[in-house]
Length: 106
Image (tube, rainbow, N blue to C red; front, top):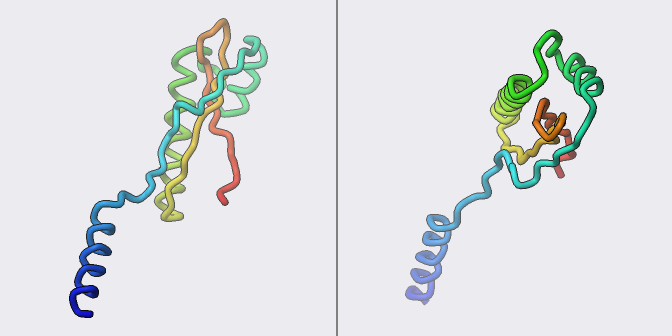
């Protein structure tokens, strides 16, 4: 009986050490790209606080970084990790704005 207990204990310890917990992160493979007009992109960029920022790579980068900072703060505050992805608005195939859509955490 003592041997069985030792074997089970060793098995449990090895599982704790080898099993890697799930990690939450930005999942770029789930990104969605939506082609929009310049006017539509401009309206959305203005709503997100990017008035007077020229549409293009700069607004895409700024919107991505701002939302990543917010997600990091939420994760720290709530002590959870959140998987997320982006909807990239594109004009003529070039990403101009990244939107992290909210989805329920179940």
